[in-house]
Amino acid sequence: MTFATIVSDHAAIRPDALAAAADGGTLNYSQFAENAGRLGSWLVEQRAERIAILGSRSLGAFIAVMGAAWAGAAYIPLSLKAPAERLAAILDQARPDVLLIDRHGANLVDAALEQNLIIPAHILLRRSSWRTRLV
Image (cartoon, rainbow, N blue to C red; front, top):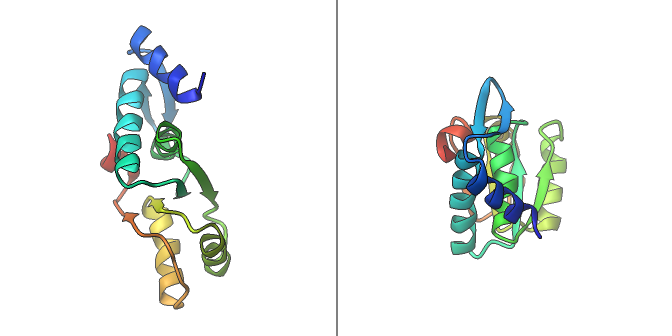
């Protein structure tokens, strides 16, 4: 049984139970499963097998990790504390199919682009926050 299956089953049994809380916000299992499932479906449509996630620890990050799991993809967690050169080197070596970022991650990606470092991701989801995009 996968973690995605456990969450999906729990959402069916107790949809209003608290699944996650961060940044002053909360998600119940129904909301969490819906958002992670929607992202997972989109990742499957993109044929993404490797997902890089660059952002703050938030509800959006939680959804991003679960969305990758839902899609059966590997995810590559990236640190906001990493210098742009390190980020570019990791992305160059890992070659993710998708890079999911929040506004904090966007700042680091912008710094890497300004320094003419290569960011090999095909798709950037860039929003003011992941919650806005995914919830």
